[in-house]
Amino acid sequence: MPNEGFAMNDQVSKQVNKAQDSSLNFRGWFEIDHIRDGQVIDHRVINNTITNAGLAEVAGLINADQAGSLNAFDYIAIGTGTGSASASDTQLEHEITSGGGSRRGGADVTGTRVTTSVTNDTSQWVTTFTFTASFAVTESGIFNQSSGGTMLARQTFSAINVTSGDSLQITWKVQCS
Image 1: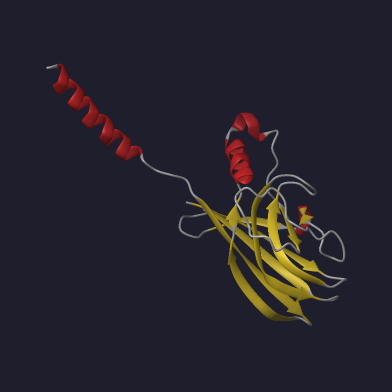
Image 2: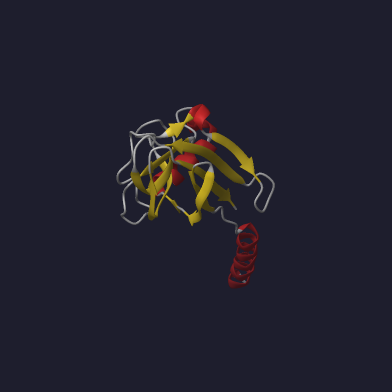
């Protein structure tokens, strides 16, 4: 008899766990428009890499007891680093801090939620960098502070060569599914 009870409990347990099996995934991408003389001369859509530190910060933001001590992700940075993006990244490799390429946030970044698969399942950030110097831009990331801070996502890409007067409009999207 004891074995029959164990077998039944084991079956119930397996069915309950199976019914509760769900996961929360974060995936994202960003779009870059290189604008010269008012015309888009290059448009790219690039998948991103969500960082481990970013995931930990999101987990804290979900928990109301910790959320007050954490900052929302509302800054976009660009850089000239070429090392492959990794989940263990915590900063851009070579962040641009001058010539119109400095990190943008606050009123300079429009943050909204948009619908990808489910209503409002995707966070979206949009900003435009207008350059006063030339750079070979090769990386971008989302941060939660105007300097330093936690990086949610990063990615590198082939160089976009900007010159004074050029703009880059960047639209980041992170979907929760």
